[in-house]
Image (cartoon, rainbow over all chains, first blue to last red; front, side, top):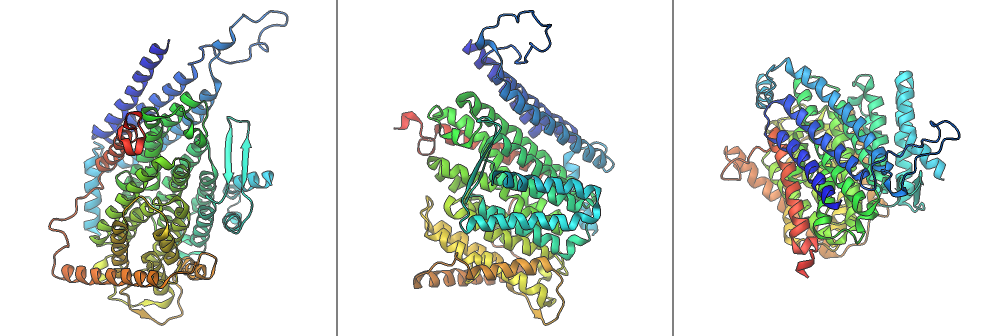
Length: 133
Length: 496
């Protein structure tokens, strides 16, 4: 099992790296924001992977949902997934979503200046505005 | 005590929501929150017993209201207070006060949080609020600056979370203390620590990962610049200082990054021709000095933050931001005096607060050679000598109340317990540094009049978006290499 874990972890970190490369290399502002989201997704996957290390079974108390008298299916104690990283990453997902929304609002406003959303043109728009002033 | 502290942490957020519903209450509520934070910071500095709060179990939130957080709390409270009292902030539109309260709440949490998840949430709250504050002026330059700020900030926080996940994987804890776990060593420590450090270094505006800082602080509206340069960068600095205390083996690495940041900032500030950009580059340089010594760092950040916030508040009332016009027009005493005092404090002139913190920094044990530190000090003095060539004019006007308040504090602090007895040589050295700085400035001024610069080539422009992201990635990669494979800093087994 540890080998599979290391492999999966490497794949997840590669996803983050791919996002980082996109962030660095793409010239389009929208694609940059998208690449940032790929990074975020990779990070979420990493937390889910860390949570799944002790076991895959979702740690939800099922006694409340099963009718009284029926026995719970026997699950070895070690097979539960760790709830802590999942709880932590929920916060990060919400924060990531709101930041993505804010970025897209600003990108929409900037699209009125340059519909192509080329980052270099925004650096130049700055210079142009400074010269006009 | 526990309940009181939790109430203090939640108060700014509650106040912000109430102020959104009842706008007339916004100003008193904001002032109250800032006062409370100031008082708590001062009480901690004067000897209030530190408290540790553990909320929701050993894996939950861990807060430490201690002496490390004290100067930062004092700084945030005072800067917010000064910004609220300043004329320039009264012109800001409705949500400004609400945002300031949320910002203060986020900063308070970031200063006292000692578990990595709470710190993440606090820093993201600070980042989003700072983004919205920059957007208080919705012109295209501010849109672009705010976008860059949030894009860079959130990207590094994603990297930071990798460090958090790896720490939990190897130690089963989110606490800062878990970084000392013996399970972490060599490459494993590098994988945990490098992403965390990139996140905090970028938030603190240090070296290449802080290249976002100058333009952001320069283009933001003046009261927002004061908040950003005075208090917001401290949100990254305080956890970095906590890390330095926890991991003495990594302290030299951080000190060298700080020194590199200080040199870069001073060099760029000397070549700058715009007032707010000069101040912003100087922030990048001064936060570097904060990292040199964790024991002095907090006090240094306090002295710098107060002075820099005052300078940014005053910069709103100065006739022209162009430094070529500097000194052509006399400033009223109420504006010129705070400008002078704040500049002198950062330059390290006695008996202001900046002088005492600089002395403490010089006397402390450090991993970097004193000659380099001296070069930075002379450079800083030269940067601010330029601002000190300022004709004053007697007048009763007080254009910037906030700047006046902060400058007053810098003077008052000299009477407080920070003033330690110094030997004659230390006084001579301080005066020598100031004189050398003034001489450098005279030379540079002559060069500028001749149309030349002090370097054979103009300084590279480092502030386009690819530079910011590249700087961040570069620092991350370098940290990974340095921590994992550099024998001196990383402590890899094969080196011993």
